[in-house]
Amino acid sequence: MLESLLFIIMSLITVSCAIGVVCQKNPIYSAVFLIQTMVSLAVLYVLLHAQFVAAVQIMVYAGAIMVIFVFVIMLLNLNKDELEKDRNKLPMQKPAAIILGLVLVVMIGIIMARTIFQGAEGEYTPEVMDQIGNTQLVGKMLFTKYVLPFEIASILLFAAIVGAIVLAKKQIIKEEEL
Image 1: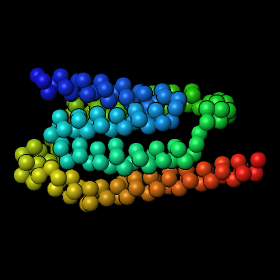
Image 2: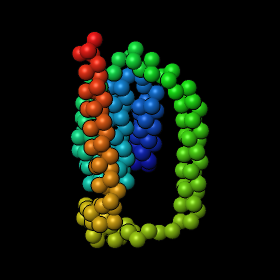
Image 3: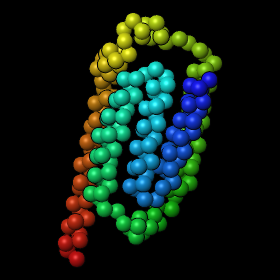
Image 4: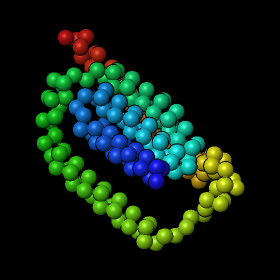
């Protein structure tokens, strides 16, 4: 009973912080909301008996990745005037985002409906996980079956950091010319 109540409370906190990430105009506040979302997800992982994944969530995502995000945001030095000026450049952005968001919600609904109604049990049942161990299983899957997506994610993060540095360097050069 207490575990279910904690799960509901943490789920509500996670969803409200995720909404705060999207709705916040200040990028630093958005990053703080994202950190809280990551911490809340870690609590949800603990409630699902995935302690290793929760620890990795805190150390890697809420720690290292968010520090990189905050550095990139501060490196870009975004001003409100620039944000307001850039907002008018793409008038079709808002309707496109709404349509794509609805498509995403429908896709998630279809996938969840198929998963719930099929009820197929996976290869790794709770008994197998107790035998192997949660940490060993995550390591085995990460470095065998999911090594390509893991490496692609790291390359994408690296490309985003390099892109932010390039954008910041262009802005510094423009300011020096003035």
